[in-house]
Image (cartoon, rainbow, N blue to C red; front, side, top):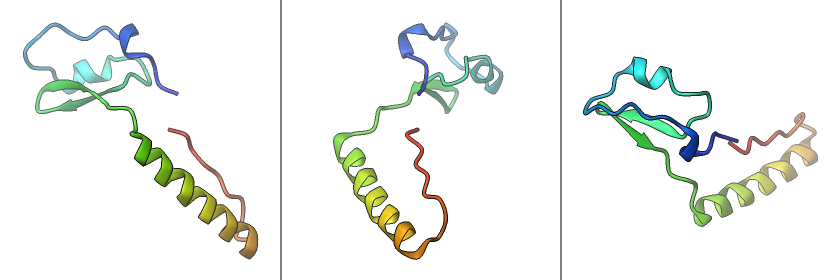
Length: 75
């Protein structure tokens, strides 16, 4: 799980660089887009439903075909 946004210190400047982004703590919920640090949105309920349904389908396939371990990342 990522770091809470309220615990991240964002540089107070008009344009940020990759170096500014790289100094953020691991897991900080930000992206560098056009020189701005933009908070990464949380997944929507619809997105989470799609991930769940896809995971269930893939898990069934993996079990049925013995294709190997089925792993899920909750990133």
